[in-house]
Length: 359
Image (cartoon, rainbow, N blue to C red; front, side, top):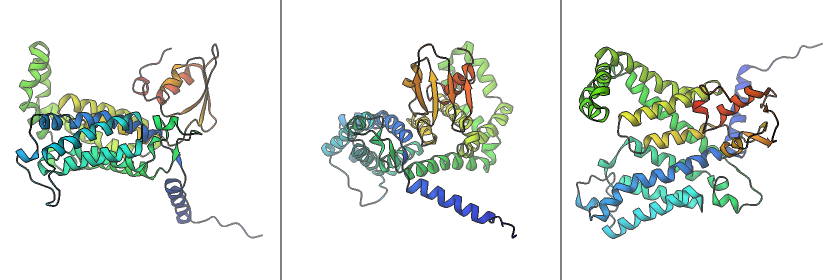
């Protein structure tokens, strides 16, 4: 009898690679995560365009200030047309959020934001570039299939579409964290705390005005200490690198999302980054597994159904019943264990799930 020969490891890797490519480019999956990003981007675009629209209403456009075009062939729209384009962008952002003509509205929003961005190099900000990247990724995906007015007109309802734009968005998002963290890691002034120490000293008077003398003085005494920044800076660098890699793996993804939210809240409190914090937190929805209702849940509470925006659970609401959840692998959780697990998977509650242990 001839013994069976195990296939080489390289063959297994090729098989897994072909399977991943087929899932990414050929097999439809849930686009709920992208739909959540679409909803977040609408108000963010309006807030982003607000100062430009305010200037235009006061008669100030790119024609009235210093301008360095990205490319000579980008045309300057006349003042009236420029204002009209900004209003079109605002209207398209509203339609994008409510999900009416979702995909067309997203493309129009992208066009207006990108045109305004490329009118001058002095307009460049990393957060604005990230906004354009997210708009492009959402526009490439058929995101109006769910969480939209468009979805109400679809019969039967189907939230599945090709998800290769999701993988593109994931790569772009992770690359931003990695590029930021790695560039600081190889910069001795950054990783050694000199940059953060300098910024703290520069803005300490502003912080004291906000916090007041009673709270501000002792807090700033700690923050402006060179030793504190020497410890904090490597932690900040490690945080960005952990997010960049942790988001890719299921075992570390939930922790990476939690750290990312805390990271962006900290940035928002300490610096002016326009809409970056909001869109970055919203973009974390793309890391949700693109499958729906693959866990079954019996619960007496209706609030789970209202908060299950990513459709993690196939929910049966049974008044008076005890909590019971069956996971993807067949694991059964009951009672408080099931309730706690559910809290860790709902976008509105997962941030507090580690501290919220009681009914």
